[in-house]
Length: 242
Length: 286
Image 1: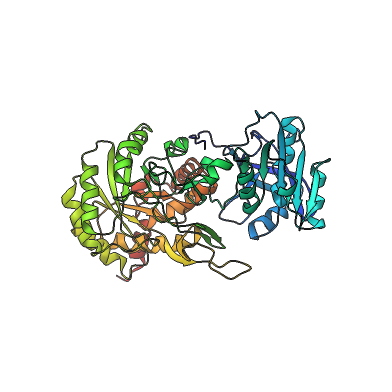
Image 2 (image 1 turned 45 degrees about the vertical axis):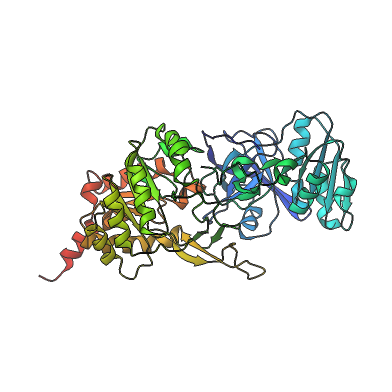
């Protein structure tokens, strides 16, 4: 687990430079402005117009001068973000949280469903890496186009069946998949997800149970190790972080 | 003066946001450490947000040894919000804080909708706190009180030095597909734009009966919103939900408030305070 205090939060209103479908998802590209793309696995808070709260989105791609986010329109907020079109504006705060460590020898990228989102930027920053992706349907599997050359499995085949535990696994996907990967490879780096109101430690909304305690994912993660996730409660540790 | 609403900012995680405030109010500290409520803890509604954090905090011991020294380094006044489950809890918390120079004031959280209400009436809790500390004491009241002005007057008589109006109000949201409650604890505290007229009414009512300074909190997103709270009687304004999506809000709201005041020929907050009431009186028949 890595915690760090944060300063220099940066938020800008950015214009959308383009948006298009990727399978059932939508890739929304915005002008980068003065925001830093950050490390793969870090996230940004995007506020849909007319909504009280922003939504956390990991960076999918960092084309020159742009930031690109892959949106799964599953709720009101994500539907509003997926509806963004060229010329629209959106408020973006970030980058936030702790991303993947890139100092790995034999990387293997593992994605499940919309968990593919941070992997294209991660693959780019690693200078290429083998990728295994699992999807629940052929329609969802169209998103694999974001990672040419990836091995793709579709339900009922599970992505974990295609994972080599001996490699340095960097994964993102639904919680059952991440827990399965953690059991196979405790050193694996896993990008976790939780609803968040702020993304910078203020709201205490995004807690996940780590080592038997509820901790803020935005500060401790979102990238955790398998050990963080599987750790038994530590009796010497006190309750919630200050 | 611009503060944060208690529980809406972690000044250690985001020191630059805290330093843009005139005063930082801590998350509520309780006698013992609390993990808080099980997730899901936040939900959005069309009119704001719901939270059920459940007063997650390290407890007073760790707060005093670890958090408070870090907060003191921010270089801005620190108000410590305290909460308990009985009058002795409030007394003990205030006694501990009374000894610490880093604490500029104590805010009594008498109104969290996400935990069991403390035993003892609000007035008794304030009286016990008063006897335990010489620090300025602010009583944070719930907008769900049937007669908030009567309670404001009672806590003033019990020794409060100020009022913080208002806390969140209990609400519920349902999952779009399953129709099950979204939050892990079912209900939560509603904040954001929906709370704005509620806070205005509470400040309006309390200003009419109480001489105390009032921190107005509830759905403030702009200088205009801050001005309205001041106009009904607030002497300072707290920012809450807006901080989550816009951590730079203190700077923007302060600048907007300054131009709102200037455009009306008002020199400062003190001059604007309560002007909504002056206009009421002007309309009264002679």
